[in-house]
Length: 79
Image 1 (cartoon, helix red, strand yellow):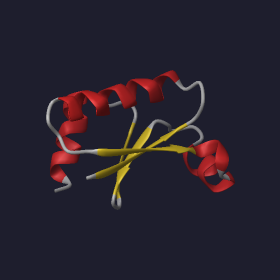
Image 2 (tube, rainbow, N blue to C red):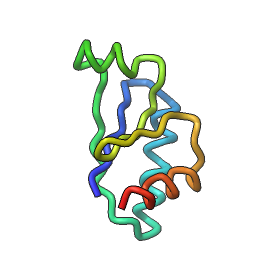
Image 3 (tube, helix red, strand yellow):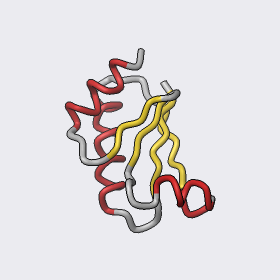
Image 4 (cartoon, rainbow, N blue to C red):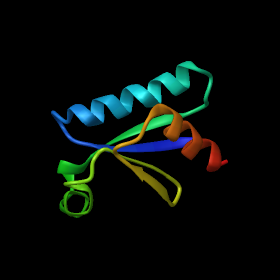
């Protein structure tokens, strides 16, 4: 499953969200994680500037704060 993580440089919450995604892959979940730098796009900055980290898959999103369990449930519901 392709998962986008909307992030920006120096965002410690984004780093935590990335670590949660990596822990899910280490636990056997088949994820392809794409880091999306919101500073590269004015539209993304407007949309996600105050809500990152945001994880998106297909047409669904989950915004911080979330636990690894909530993230797992979100991703398992997507299949």
